[in-house]
Length: 424
Image (cartoon, rainbow, N blue to C red; front, side):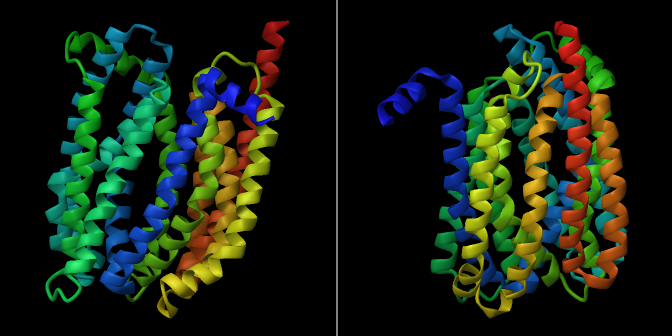
């Protein structure tokens, strides 16, 4: 039995990719947890919430101003088989990334100057300080979206792992040698975060070896794919992912301080691995999905069994974990984790079917479903967060995820029916 599994692993590229990417994600989990423990102890609940709030600001700006170009590059790479053009696509997407960064820098700078909440919580100067380095957030999307289309699972794993390892080592040294630091601790954390992200990402760019030859032709092709596919996905993401990221911002606007942002963010961090399982499996099968008429039932059953086993384990461990490692100040995270975990599970499976639809170029379906889900997210957030704060955001996770998975299953069944009829 074991010998047969080893042989399957050695002979099957997809199994190797699933195992390697999943192993990286599993390894990242304790790194992220320990990093968060160190940061929370170094900053405290309020400053940790400030740190997460700033992350929400930049993540939301990237969702708002990417205009679908990363998804357009994704589509170009999925349909491409020429390794020379592949390098040119990566180069042209870096040019587009630079243009998007310029737009985001201007908008966030204006936001930092005029927003009352940012000023009241003393975060204006911090936001302005980070703006020149905001391109690292764009690079995260660049790697995640393009590498799965080009089936560069090894580089995708490294882009996730290397910055986190470097950051973990740096903040561990920070905690050991700067325990009694009396200055701006939030700024110190951000300096370490930015430097480690830059170091890890520049290495990945070097490994891609992008080419800027035939730039005009490649940009023209990406523009075409953006009009026919990318912008549809982007427009939908504005409603779905965009309104989802509003939760962290809204908690801040309706809270006395940003501690609630930190509690909610920690609950998401703890439950996030539950969504890794369907995400990793779908990502490594993305190229295969494009030539299949349906997702194999065996793949769905394996994904479901592993995911729900992880959910039960999460419920058992979360209470002792928070009490021992984070302390009584972070007790509200336990209840939030139980609530959020349901939403993460449903989102993970919805993303699983989303990948299949995306591999078949179903941009309109993804856009429409994202708009539907996004509108529900907006309504739930506006209705629940002003009254219940971070708990309202947690319940929004469940309700919106339920809408999301229903929408994905409906579009998936419709596509499968169409593909089956075309093969008869």
